[in-house]
Length: 497
Image (cartoon, rainbow, N blue to C red; front, side, top):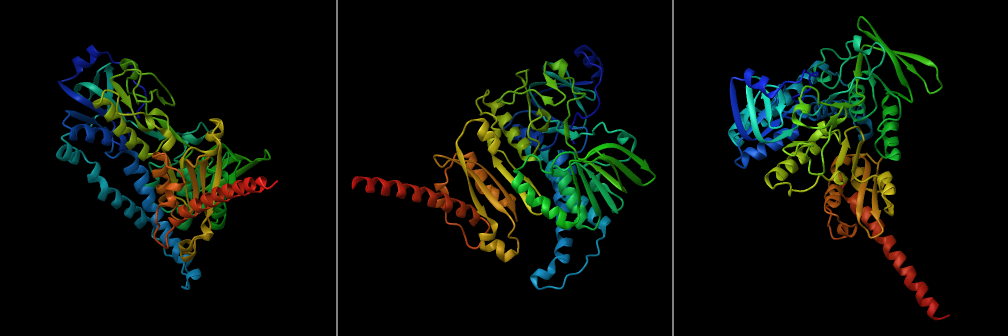
């Protein structure tokens, strides 16, 4: 979790801070928040010889290590193992119902976090990068001053990397219950018999399927459609798998009120037809979105503009105070660990190179939802291309034509590449086995402005899922060649008229 996620505090003047502080620290760079973005920026600055201080009041490693990417993928790995045991008959193996020791699964999750914690530790930051870490909340008391505990820090540049926190919707009665979010779901002390999940986005979907495959009954309550930011055709593949897995999927249902009686949660929802329906379970996970951690930072004292959605930054990641940069979730943009890391590097380049390090480019960002099957995207969406007036076509390559997918028994899936008239790859969407790995080729292509014919020159090892990319390229090349042949034939025939 990021550094400044607390509630708003009364403004503190610089004079007040000076009277409170027992020591003053002057540095080149001060980074607030030790998540992915903050660690990247601080480690880079320290490694390049800049005197750097990192502030973090909560857990080092931020959301990704402690409450997000690492624990969720560890839990999902256990869920996949359980599912493989049930699904063994199609591989010629006698299926068995797994004996799931849920608390041991949770212990494995926590052990994985602990095993990786050193990578993000304050000891490593000091030993490898020369960065001092102060385990206090950072708060601006002036345009170039931050108070952290009893230390007043004066820096040439600041990087705000305080991340985001789970958004808790204003549903009647919800605040009075013992619901959990992603910050508690990996610390459960019992296996839910019936898990109710509010929200069908990436977090809600991943946790819903993982719990279902581990043996819990699961209901997803989603006001819209699950995976609403992804290609609807591909999201439908995930939807069908959820239903096949036995997840009770309630799309178009609005949560109206929540109550808790002992260990039982009851969520009253409004159905698409306007009727009320009560859904009860013994655990309630709220996963309806995130909010930027801007409270308690003293941004007004620093002259930094922000809204509840996040801190305002320009394309160099500068705030309205040119000495202060903001990166990652706290800016209100795309909320992914890899985006925060990318922006951490970019902000540091712009600090060191006096804003000549480059611009923040969200057109090349990939993302993956680690359901089964995985759902992945990179680049611009079809809607964005239409909004920008860019002509494109969709080149499709199905998983069922791929030999490796057939060998693995996972033929449900498709790759859709968004290709401009000149062959430029603008984006790609895919769903299927290891889609998060297949998308890597397109992430490289989009980031470097490559065209489809770049895949023509690549030799893909056989049999691999990566050949799907070659299949899409072959489809494009064939159409292009066929069209050119037809035009030449028509021109030649015209000569005989």
